[in-house]
Length: 406
Ligand SMILES: Nc1ncnc2c1ncn2[C@@H]1O[C@H](COP(=O)(O)OP(=O)(O)OP(=O)(O)O)[C@@H](O)[C@H]1O
Ligand SMILES: [Mg+2]
Image (cartoon, rainbow, N blue to C red; front, top):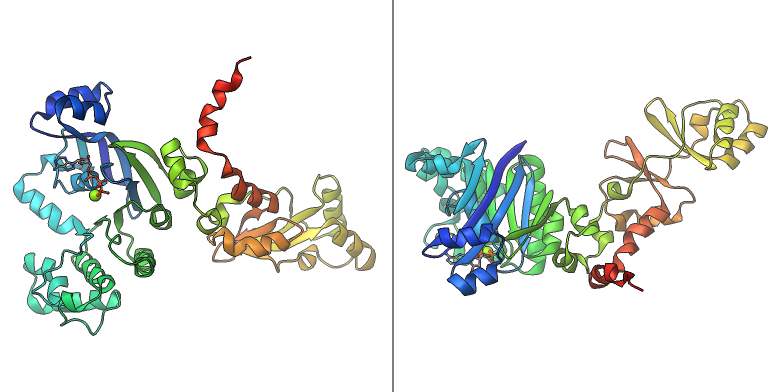
């Protein structure tokens, strides 16, 4: 279900946005409009749907409109044209009191520069939102202490921000945002000021928290690795326009234009793509226990191996050779017991982890989910295709159609 819908939003910065808006709507670009009118196109016809309980990442170079976009969601910025709908409510229709209520209860922001009150202790920073809501002291201190513990800062309740490292300060920022139990977390470059290792740790913590909390998170970054790691969906902005929206694997495998292609060119796919992206249904499912019947079925099929199921229960893979040998030596045994279930990979593991198992196996390896249920198979060939095919230069690809002349 869509939690946040952004519909045909334009934002023009300047004194007379209407005139520039008309030009933008007629298709003129940001540079042209700026040099002719002095107005800046912050956003150009953005339509996006952000699903409830998912992490939506907005990515793009500096000046592409990321902050402008996120600030529309809690109406810190109003659009020049278009609508922003949260939980079915057009935020532009909210009066002042409703808007205050909306910002207090539905949304929380986490800032790049942490935005902590320097003269307040950690616990008072975290409890601030609840204090503003008039929550009674004892209760808000208890709540704040819980969140401080959740982000791993127990023991620092009475420290001041200046006594903490950057990573710790941002944990306070995160605890403060979560303390009011908002439905939506708006995070504008929240981890960008942190050292790489600390940053990576914060990303892990956010993923872990999100597995429990299921917030709707809008996360802004200019870092593709961060976007791929955190995003259920990623939108890529360029000069205020949307270049592409998609799942991480769609962005990686099917970049919509040269701008996106340039971003993804150097990504280590093995570290980003998960097994389920390259998984396929098995070509031969065997559902009989009887060796002769299984052998007949396999002989009528192009593959000399099959995946054995007892009802929905995956029992393992078996080869034609193995079946043949069994038919002559122990014809009474069950295919279910002969099948080899020792080699499986997990659907959500990254390719890098699954690589050794897949490469060492003679047959495509069964993919299971975390409950051990069969999901599909992954072959060496598919794996290699996905890991190698992207090396073509986008510039060459763009020139290709022109080469068709005599
Ligand atoms: N208040 C403002 N007045 C005029 N122009 C603005 C204003 N805010 C943003 N802009 C312009 O709008 C465009 C988008 O800016 P925005 O801050 O949203 O980019 P960004 O993607 O967040 O960049 P960064 O990665 O540097 O934070 C830029 O061209 C910027 O100069
Ligand atoms: Mg910004």
